[in-house]
Image 1 (cartoon, rainbow, N blue to C red):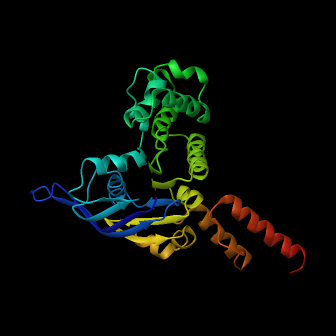
Image 2: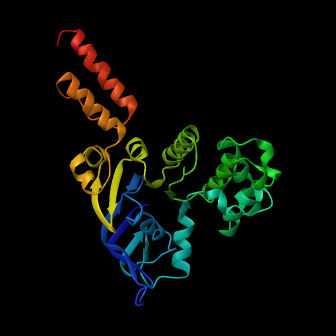
Image 3: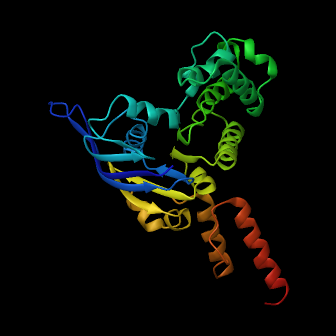
Amino acid sequence: MDIVFQQVSFAYAPGTPFEKKALFDINEAVPSGSYTAVIGHTGSGKSTLLLHLNGLLKPTEGTVRVGDTLITSETKGKALRTVRRNVGIVFQFPEHQLFEETVLKDIMFGPLNFGIPEEEAKALALELIELLGLPADVADKSPFELSGGQMRRVAIAGVLAFKPSVLILDEPTAGLDPQGRREIMELFERFHREEGLTTILVTHSMEDAARYADHVIVMHEGHAVLAGPPEDVLTDGTRLEQYRLELPRTVRFQRDIERLIGGPLAERALTEEKLAALIAQRAGEQGDGR
């Protein structure tokens, strides 16, 4: 599902003494099926941008097209319901959104609200409990009896349960330890790949952007200032520094290695695994006398 921002600007409390501009003339496209990372410092406009994708915010000026639905400042009713049926958002600390008596009811809430029959919603919820690595017996437990990591998985299951075409991830691993972060991010990557989702990751982590994204948008003070493949955007240290962003660790490490060996490796690496393969290739070439 393609997403297009055309001349989008947004102001909180417009026309009042408290008006605050948050987005300025955004013109960006998110290709259908892409995994797009939106990066930038706190206050850069990342979260404001994503809230336009299911109509929680509507542009003060310009248009947002999500699939066949156009969102403007006047859009409401059926059009917004259509968008919200297709766009799922996993917020920071999604476990704070849990409210039902049992895990099963919480996961079923979204599908039932969008008209999915009860038996189908129940079967889907049980399937997601298994896919997310939760014990089968959690279905009838209160979500508030679970560990923090399990609660987060239940909340994520509730978003995935209505089978969105677009999945928005707003700092979804906030507060997790490194192992928990990696498990959750790998889970999203698997769903993105297997379900053919359009995925948008809003993150402070340059490493997550480098590892998972195939398209990157850099936000700075309400403007979309850079966009393109991660191999281009996330290796441009000069431009990133202008927006107070650092190169991903792997890119920095590759540059250190290249200085030590006195020349470039064959390609630019965005992950540790890719960098290790390039180093092994270079060592093999030197061992062969090339």
